[in-house]
Image (cartoon, rainbow, N blue to C red):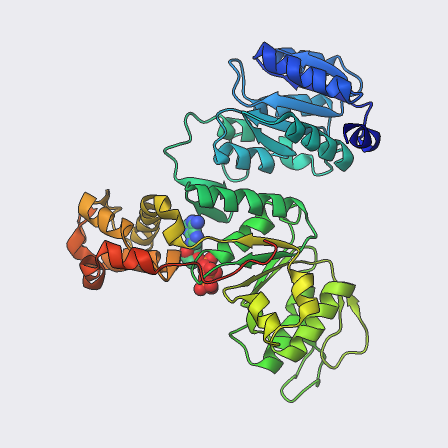
Length: 444
Ligand SMILES: Nc1ncnc2c1ncn2[C@@H]1O[C@H](COP(=O)(O)OP(=O)(O)OP(=O)(O)O)[C@@H](O)[C@H]1O
C-alpha cells in the first residue's frame, strides 16, 4: 500500500520546514525526506527568512503559526518576497478557525491543526505541490483591503477570541464560533478555493445561505468579478428564464430592447441561484445546458454566448426527495451537487447566539441612528439562548430589531421586557425537543 502511494507521489521538491519545536521539525523532515524531497529546516521566522533568501529554488513552506519571533503568516509574507507564488501549509496547535480563515485568505494552501496525523501532512504536501505555484500572488503581499494595515498585522492581532467574527473579509461578516459553524466556514473556504466548482448550499430558511454564497465569492480567485444573485422562487417562469439567460429585442411582447441575463452579467464572477429547488422543469433543462456547456443562448437569440461563471446554488428543500418525486431532474441534481455544504440550523449552533445577537444589535442600532446599547441583560440573553429559532438567524435578527425599537432611545442595554412577549413566555424543554434538521444531505 505504502509502496503504491510512493510511486504516484510528487517528489524532488524543496521544502522549508519552520517550527520552534525541534521534535516537530525532526518528524516532518524525516517524513518529507522519505518522500524524496529536499528538506531545509528553520527554528523560527527570522531563520526561515534568511534560509529562504539564500535559496534558489523553494517549492513549499511548512510553517508553524505561533512562534516566538513571528507568526506563520508573517513568515509566509516575507518568504514570498523572495519566492513569489510559493505554496504554504500553516500548522498550528492554537488553531482558531479565524487564523485558518486568515491563512487561507492570504494564500496559504492549507491549515493543519496539531496534533496532526503524518498522513494528513503528506497528503496536504502532495496536493500543494501538485497545485503548482500560486498565481494569485499579488493578493497575498498586498495590504489588507480597507484597513491600511498589512495582512500579517491583522493576522497577528492579540487573542482573536473576543472578536465574534469568524470570517471578516470585505463585504462578508460571518459571525459565530460554534463547532458546527467552524466546520461550515472551513468547508466554504475550501469550496471558495476551487474557483470553478459548483457549490450547493443546503439549509433551512434563514441559516445564512446568501452570506455563505458571498463568502464563497469573496474568498475565491473570482472576487474581482461580479457577484450576481437571483431568487428562483420569486419570479414567474418566463421572467425567470429571461432574468437568467437574457433576451433579444422583440423576443416576446414587451421586450423593447435586448437585455443580458444574470449568466452574462456574472461573467468572470459568481452567480448565486437561491431557491434552486423551485425552478420549473423547462428552466431546469436550460440551466443544465448552461452548466454543462458553459454557454447560454438568450431568449429569441440565435447564437450561443460563452460564459465563465461559477454557480453557487442554494435550497431549503430536500432536493434528493424532489428528484425522487420527479419534480427535479436527476441530471441537474448531479450537476449541482458537486460541492454540497450543509448550513446548520441555529439550534445546532446555540453557542453563536450571543455573538450574533450582539452583532445585530450593533448593526441595527447604527441603522436606526440609536446609540449602541451596551448589550443584553443576562435574562434577555438567556431568553434568546433557549429559543428553538425555527426561522434561524434571520428570526434572531428580527427579534433584535424588535427589541431595539421597543427599548428606550437612551437604553443602556436590552432588557427582557423589550423582547417579544411570545418569546419570553416560551419554555425550554418543549421547544428543544421539536427541532430536527428538515433536510437530508445526500453524499454530503
Ligand atoms: N453567520 C452569520 N453571521 C452574521 N450574519 C448572518 C450570519 N448568517 C446569516 N446572517 C444574517 O442573517 C440574515 C439571514 O441570512 P441569509 O439571508 O443569508 O439567509 P438565507 O438562508 O439565505 O435565508 P432564506 O433561505 O430565507 O433566503 C441576513 O441578514 C444575514 O446577513
